[in-house]
Image (cartoon, rainbow, N blue to C red; front, side, top):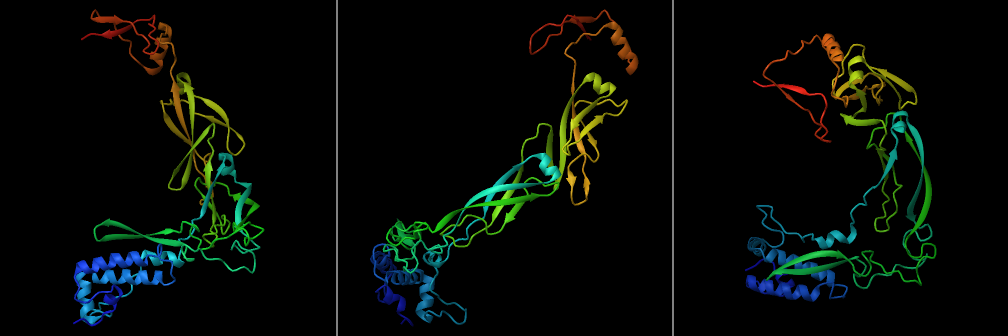
Length: 379
């Protein structure tokens, strides 16, 4: 004998019914009381009761506990039953929080290095001041949608297998989830029923010296108004650098390193080099390689205090210069020049041998043969 018959009465069943009877009754009653098909005021409540009863009675273990102890469950195991909260309820009065609005601001490396002020024109939606975001004239009650009865959503069932029904909730197809229908005769004259107005504002964005890329600047409650989400969120600007003709940046551990590439000749790599450039601080800076220092191809040299500002340490990082050494196009040198180079680098002259084989060098790109032969020693 069962302690409580409420769930059985909801499904119009006798406590001695089988699992097959429970499934059959559920399918029949769910179809009868589904809010999409049954427009009576009690349909939604009745439908939820049917779902709750089926959830308990279709599970053998839960049904056994219910039969023996009723809705309160087994007091020794603290097992009880509550009306389950379905997706149906989640959409009734709660809506997900509107996301913040993100926009990008592209700045030059000079502006990031020195700091700047940027005036921006923003166009955004705001809540209509006449109807306070309702979309209807003052004094007019909000008319409920006759499809969803003002809930803004529709519950649908999808049979995915015999005896297995999937329930899901979608925004109402008629009112688009608002729960109300605004007809032309009652709509607000200022916003024409859209619930919002267009506002043109100005914002001054202040960037400090040494502003890092991807820095986010937040303006609370300045995002566009969304009638479906009354809470106005934040407008957030993200800083990005424009490409620079000379300098490159690289961020390591929140420290911006400043790089540049400089092409020099082989002679300049050996004998020294100097060049002048326009720095991000607006000054002309002359950079000289150390006297007597031979620069290797693709070597990276640092120049202190010419890099990006380090605001936290109130100093400047280093500027790094990568040197690309350009070798001469001509492959031929006179004996006099060869001897001079050998003397400078203290190289021994290669002696000729009867086993030497003379080959001609050609350019792999153009196929042009060089006039001066080279020697390849055959072992």
